[in-house]
Length: 581
Image (cartoon, rainbow, N blue to C red; front, top):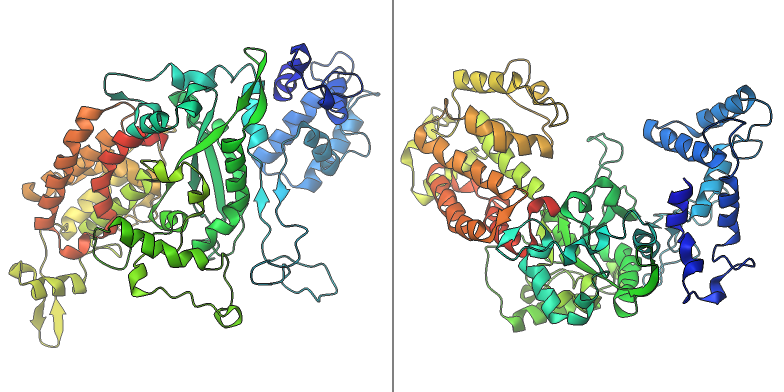
């Protein structure tokens, strides 16, 4: 614990001759008074002949509380019991009376806290909306939303304060491949082109490159309750590939509360993060390098965002829906961006604000100009927004499996069959009228009832290695006729491991061959080591695969998500392996 705290707070600052004396405490040790008390607490054992110091014990106990979701009251009772049970004169922290509140105050001195943004702002500066749900209540006022912001700069500095991580932070400058092999974003063309455009930034290997991921989730785990909380997480791409995507390397920067997602107003909540990123890019921050025992000016940049298709619309301002694909000239894009610049950055009553938010025809699908364009380098980035492959894989898998099993996720609907009639194609699949009813002829891409049972039994009997995935067999219903409740990772395993085997014996060769080829394409794309040559060859391959599927499945099958598969090889060449994005 002594080494950890010493690294976290840069305890070796006093050994540097360039130390800023204005930041020193009265003892000239470069450590603030609150933290000095923590260092003193480390010198005392919990009780005589105990292997734990009082601070060690408190840190481990709070960690266990968080993992096991203990209540605050149960934690308070445990501290009181331990204080009574341990030998007299013990130092069960915090000082009596021990409580979770006092424990948090003690650990807060390490400096890992957050800010409640606009906690002193009573009204919105744009629409004059009150911060409170009911500002005239006599009881405790309740805010509409409380944004929690975790500053980025101190946590980036601590990656260099620590002797355990500072050497890993310059791995990207020595681990780059030159032979077309891609194992890290540093091997992608986006990183290389940025280095060529901004040589002053790339010349210092300790400058930090970040990736941003954002998505909504239901904190209550109840899908019947439409609640969406949005965490915004950063990861550091300076680290080697075996570290940059570990959970311990993720940094939660924003926690946007529900019950509704921010939608196109996500930029309002990103404001404190973007302001800090602008500061880190333009001026940097003086940081201690524990390995070299020197100071340097650390700068940082945002390399790209990682998101699913709906979240991409919120981040970029491009809806991506509402019409067929088309090419825009630079003048058209600038014209489309012009009007969103003057829209209010929050949801206000149109009549009260006197501003209409409806798009004109010339605006097409642009709903706003993204706040990321305030970053000086953003417009020059080759790859700004990454599609999350797991979400693409899940949606494509839902369509394939749902259409094969003919469940509620099937794309083979009555309207899809009616489209075939309008297009005058595949007459054998047109709706057949029988009296006052219509029925659908059985298609070659769906299982018959006996085959459906065989496929579901195959999935039910699958046994996966511990930690490899969830028990997919539990997702098969009792009648062995449907598979429900699969998550993103379940579809990841299903598409790459199980579906190629399951469909081979129940569908015709002309149908299962392109399905297997699609699954193998996704498996190749998810490899930790890629080749530029292979990815360039994969682009025409996936086009051929989708053309084969278009001959088999109805046009309704090919929505925007299926189309996104075409762009994945290009993204891999530009950004590196998908496991890093």
